[in-house]
Length: 167
Ligand SMILES: [Zn+2]
Image 1 (spheres, rainbow, N blue to C red):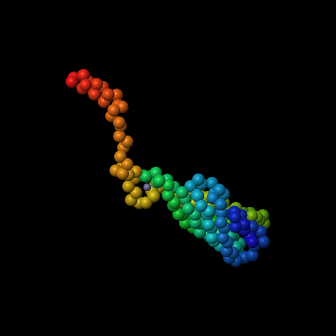
Image 2 (tube, helix red, strand yellow):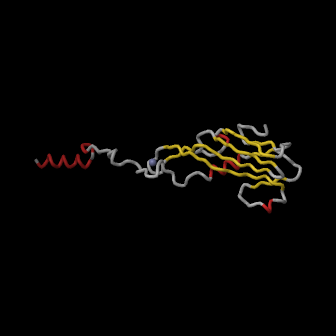
Image 3 (cartoon, rainbow, N blue to C red):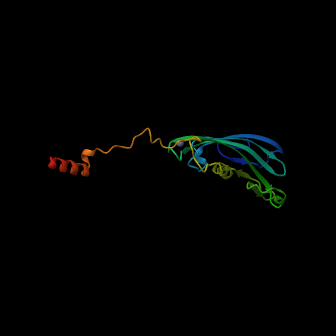
């Protein structure tokens, strides 16, 4: 195994050229995002040649609070991620996709994709958090505002006192 299925560390030293599949199940505590409440399933493949290309699909579930009704709800997230490790000096030919890392020469190496996966999930945190698109918000009609018992309101007491004095 060139990787540990319970974290995101990959041993590239001595790996053969070609495509290597991998699947990791990561505990949410490894990714420092409070909204991640379930295990993170990462399936992908590593293409090894003069460079190393990780292509993966990240799936997890976020636990969010609805902006309108304040109820908690599950928000499934699926996102692709590509991370490339390339020999330093040759990165000029590559499109800068934000997930390009360099390594130098013979110094090789174990790589850790935790931060890349963290960033990919973080980008999927929705700006607007709604349990459903047409969430009506806190249902005002169902729960009547609490009625004030008039007998205990000072004004009511005063009024009824005046009233009884009039009689
Ligand atoms: Zn809602």
